[in-house]
Image 1 (cartoon, rainbow, N blue to C red):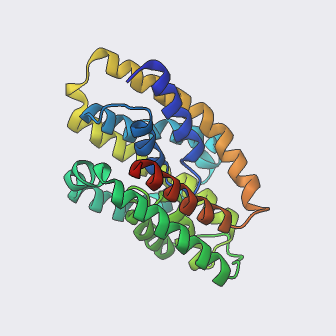
Image 2 (cartoon, rainbow, N blue to C red):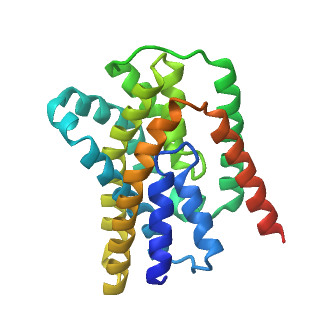
Length: 252
């Protein structure tokens, strides 16, 4: 991996992390498009730079995180299902799912169809507070995102909307929930693989983290404005179109 490839992947991560389009799928497919060899480091890079985008959430929501400790408790409750499943299935996720183009494309397509159907069927809720029980249910939905292509944002948003939460409430909770989720994923992956990284690998990780942080600052604000004007149907259509184009590219 080169410096410029790390920058490109970092920007892709920051711009897609909080959209319901699966940043992991975009990163995995982007590495293939850029011709980057599929090494253990590259797999870790795809996971670790996501924490750069999470740092943008911590920065933008720093006052709220400090003033509302209950928000932390809800986020930690919602994080539990993903923590358990991610720990138990770590080898399967990184060793098989991250390498399966078929799994990624199917997840993108099915997720897109679900977003379209759900948006047409669902009536907007007005609830702005999240209970402990709702947090756990949302966390269960997020756990589906261990499958690359599902999208952590899409799973949590659909789960929250189905519970009657307002669009802004669940989108912002999805942002906050990403903090413990990606902190744990990053820490565990580095613990498992970090000892094998060369000095240049650590430099590339830093480059990816910084560029993901910068682009995520833009992506978060953009998404918050977008949900007030657009439905999630547009994201569903994008996922299906993107999966179709990638399939054609791989088939050629």
